[in-house]
Length: 321
Ligand code: DGY
View 1 (tube, rainbow, N blue to C red):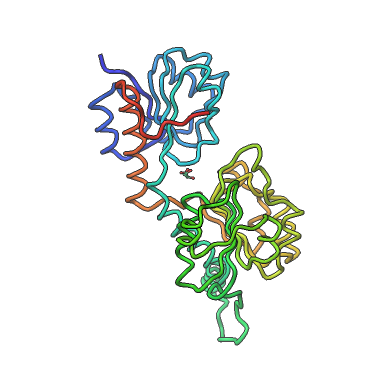
View 2: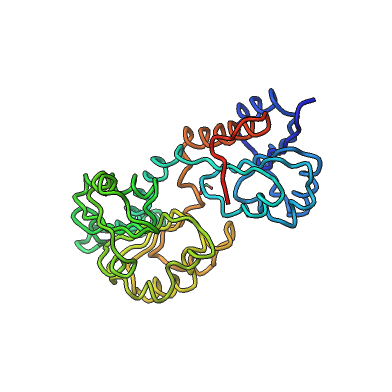
């Protein structure tokens, strides 16, 4: 008898086919977002699950699922999974690191550039038929080249963002839980390790790439925004909740910083409606890793983990509490 699994959200058909070779698969190609209770019901009797960030895995749920052995998250971030609860109930958990580093770094740059150079704002204006003449001061914004890039969260994606700044002749400051090795700093365009406060004071463009946890919640709130230059931009490709969205809206409205680029939001896919009233924010729907090749690689990596975990091998990306 094959183990049975739930694939909790829609996924590439090729990955589903591969999983079907190993498992009895309950799929969800209609891509319903299950309520917590529906998720629990669908997980009943299953040995494994391939999930995304929309599924929350916690003690109360696991307590009711004695047959569950593994959850494979199709994401590098795993703030939706309580690892201590997994440990307690002997459920393995995995994520999909590495395969999305370069794609997410590309997108971080795209969002930062669109934000600084006012690309979406000017396009909306053009589409609205407002372009009547060229003006010397239309949509002026700060330069990227030659400026100071501040990266908060200097893991693999942060380092990939820093490497790209070499071609823009930027000076890189970073803040992280721990300092990189001298070799890593050199490879990250000679990045300098500084306090969060110094980074916020001196950077022209601040990019957030740190994981979400209770400790990193509201890493950027009113006090931090107050340290930033009025000409600076803030880009978040990490997680909603790392930024206090209400404080950010106030700072953007009062032009205390120039602009923000946000791919993630507190409580997404809902987001604070006031963002829609601001011109100086670029909003995207959590797509930083969304290149065709990378999303497929993430799905295959989640499948690799699940297949390993449910066939008696160690999942390559096993997470520990
Ligand atoms: C990740 O991999 O964590 C991305 O944010 C997609 O959820």
